[in-house]
View 1 (cartoon, rainbow, N blue to C red):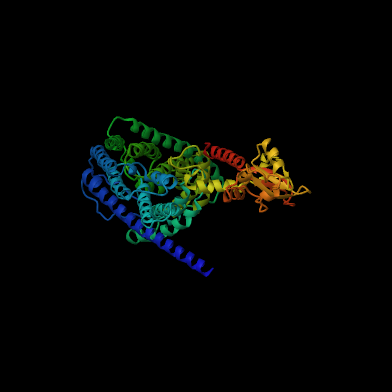
View 2 (view 1 turned 90 degrees about the horizontal axis):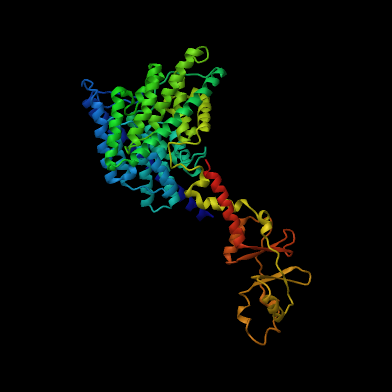
Length: 594
């Protein structure tokens, strides 16, 4: 017992150190990626185009703004060039780094045993920084999710850990990367465990490891770029239950817009896939289309967090908020769905915040005594919209609360996010999500085990076959006549009281079947084994299958639960497997049904 405990402690300590290592590397990766983005914004958009988009209050640039005058025409060129360079890097060195990296990480978790090629995080970092800082519309969570996930996968592979442990470490890397760069460690851990599924379900094996790595990564990142929330927001309070009615309407509007966003994004994705162009050129075309919109509406380019910061203090007009929301849907689709590299979380909260801000302004005009602070709906819009497009409502609520330090709005955020999730179950921006754990290839073995554990012999009593028994004193000569007229393979042996005392199969008497002179000397009791393996109505099918496989049996006697000598019939292995396959098919169809 002491040896067992010490072995477990050593394993837990090692795994804990692995998670800390993932957190440290993810934190450093976030610092490097943040620096690349800051430098890119300075040397590309600022120095070449004279365009200086604002950022969140909690994010201070290490570069000073230049005095270069604004050259609007450069907004047509920069996203195009950025898309071409990014596309060339991605499709030359790691094609799986294209698009929004979170989906690739989700696919690796479910279908690849958590395996990510080592070059993917490096390629994703460089390509995403180029895409986003040249004007492409996207977010940071996709690149940093792949950076953290890639290191977790690499470490697990080098340590020769199991596929399940590699999946966990990969997911811990997702949580660490996202939690650090958005300064939301709790939400990062929840996001890594929740975003894997369409249903509101968490991956329990991921939650604690992701939490440990996320805390470490957040501390590493914040020591360089500062602690505190990403956005500054006025203190909002929920005091009037009458506000809930406008919030329900807001949820409906956000859900409708999420449908527009997801469908536009993937329609663009599918269109670019069909284009007869080299793959590395497609992000350049997407960048050019992005630049056209950015020429008229620069606020839709790059990250867009400055827009949210203004909206939180009600510094944008109704028409500007609506224009940015629709423009951001298009620029994100052109930038990322064309094959460019970047995340979709950042654009989603900008779009949702703008929609929320616009709805807030309208309700403030219609019912100023109820909606006193229209900018509070910016926060609800951020949470609700991403809940709708990601099917991850719980982590999103915490994300937005940590990013804006607006915990007073948890209740209305909870309502709006849950409603948005419920209204938008049929679509998601993450195509690699599976419905739930039972539909995940990563849990196929556990899923099958659970099916067998969930049913008992009594549930398949209609499959139990009545068989002929043979009396223990029957001579082998008599049995040969009986055997010639039956297709039974197993022969239960009973005593004069009809009680089960033994059993044998048609292979047990093969050696004496054609031996002459002894068939009248041998009785079936001599052939039968008295060490009988039986089952009963209270036994689960997992245990039954173990009994089948332990002795390589094809059939088991089913006996009365209270009287193990009373034979009820025989249960064949093929019948159990057929029942099992039927249940697997039923549950699988149910789990993938939209």
